[in-house]
Length: 99
Image (cartoon, rainbow, N blue to C red; front, top):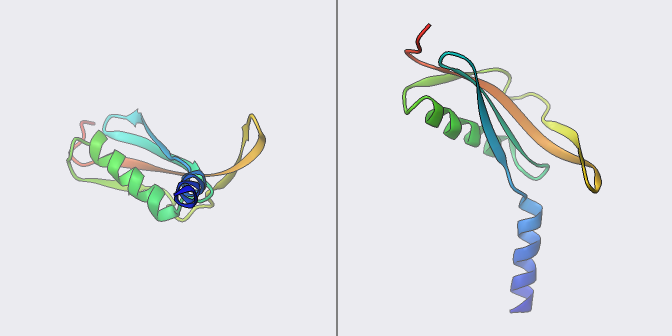
């Protein structure tokens, strides 16, 4: 039982958590950024961005603009020092937006 609990704690620490936020930059256009640990994959961050885009566009069709293949690893200052994190940011443009 102790081994299973230890394995679960280690797995949780390695996967880390993600944060995805959206900021409206123009009517119907949102800059969506997903942040995570270095163990998060590009595909996972892109999935988070797509989920957030669907939410901010109220389920309407949208398309993403930007380089989804951009370099993602950045150094973030934390209380334990410089920590490598992954960041992916794309702009979601909602179809039928008001200009």
